Amino acid sequence: MIPVSAPLLNGREMDYVREAVESGWISSEGRFIAAFEQRWAEYCGVPHGIAVSNGTVALQLALRALDLPAGSEVILPSCTIISCVLAVLEADCVPVLVDSDPQTWCMNADQVAAKITPRTRVLMPVHLLGHPCDMAPLRELADRHGLLIVEDAAEAHGAEYNGRRCGSLGTLACFSFYANKIITTGEGGMVTTADPVLAERLRAMRNLCFRRDRRFLHTELGFNYRLTNMQAAVGLAQVERIGEHIAIKRRIAARYLEGLHGLPLTLPVERPWARNVYWMFGLVLDDGVPFDADELAIRMRKEGVDSRPFFLGMHEQPILKARGLFEGEQYPVAERLARRGVYLPSGLGLGPAQQETVIDVMRQVLA
Image (cartoon, rainbow, N blue to C red):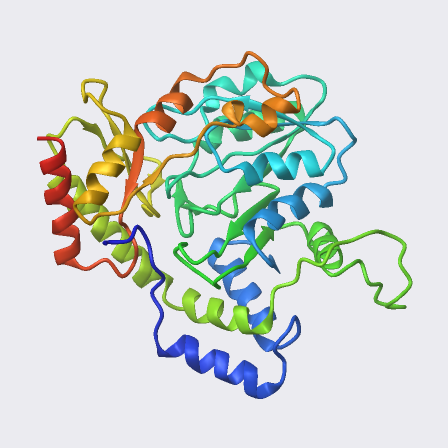
């Protein structure tokens, strides 16, 4: 079976992890934490990085750090992972959805203005599958209405918008370093920001709000969202090779774009203002194909090729509907992506011969 994704590791990761273990600093203290935070923040083009235990808690910590009034509204796309809505609810806020752009599959910026109310406080663009959201209209709305922007950049390591990297385009940005990401620590995440006050607050909140002057005197409730020194050691080694990783992703995408051309599919785009890192190579079946994404996955799996579906929209999630959210709401693009979208094996370890097999299987299944 050709898997969808697998991390690319080499001897540098082992060297750094060995150093972390031999130093005795294996938990949330040690030189690799600060080094990883600094390198990632510099790479993104901001002064501050705050390492945390995963991407979901990065989102939760980011919204909590903003100290939003209860009932504040956060506008985000329906087509995203449930972590985004989970973070909004955990902050005692209200998620407000918009549909996806039919070409980039990211948040449709043209629909955001109509969803802004006096209770709106945050816009949460999600950079999907490696392509950035269109940030200029979101920035204009944020400036006009006094809103904050929290980027979900979990899938967009190194992606760029008008020459600026994702992670530097909002008030805060959140990353995941899960095993299938371009940069991995196994499990892990990061919040980036240019705001020193927010950065200090985030560092305290991830560490149970221990005070500097008296450790076990608490004047605020925090969280245990720490990353370990060993994980940061892996992350630092990965950041040192991110250019190589992105080059592999773009090479894989280029071959898929060539090899799948002419099939009844919508393939990924790269807008003139964007640099797509193609975290995963997604595609959407044309309406004329007489089966959906689930059936496509079954047929491909029979031929030894794995795939994954796009996100099911938040407005269709049973647990969220049971809470009275998104009643009667419809988002046609998100619904189509959920039913007809898949992404193909795109891992950094995907070899040329394996990729040709995937292309051949796709052509055979759609013949």
